[in-house]
Length: 222
Image 1 (tube, helix red, strand yellow):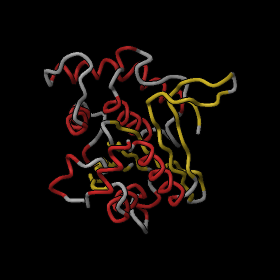
Image 2 (cartoon, one colour):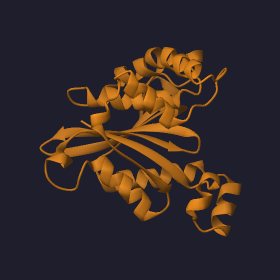
Image 3 (cartoon, one colour):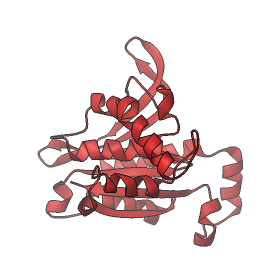
């Protein structure tokens, strides 16, 4: 896990901006020669996000620091040609603890199981528990890839100059390691009442909006 030196809300105008920050990081990643750099992520959080966030809230007639639906942000970024519709791989969602549901997301993120598609860079905005993180597939050379989770929310990160609260970038060197990270990330979000609900209730599609296990992901391919 790497600290990124800033975080969502450090610039007051980026508060509750994760729905904008995450697809912007994905866009930067897809348009970078290798992978999105840490400096580029910091620029997205502190500089690029705030004016777009104001613009989208104004467009949707939302006040203050209101949260925004991720699909509305994606539509706006496509209209602005920051994201390109032809690079959209698909959306998926469901129960984050279900192997089949999360497996569909992992397959999209890998960019295809065989052939040239699996050699392409991908990125995803991943929505879970009213927060959105970025997932980027990073080329390492010789057909190998890492998978990074970029989280704009501040967490305590062990930096060279002492522990600081900052956004984070967590790298996994295999898809299996990344799948384990996703489980760890999900379980860290569940409150005691969430766990009680999960223990008492099987997953039902019709109740997904009220279920603490529900996720949604938007995946893009270079």
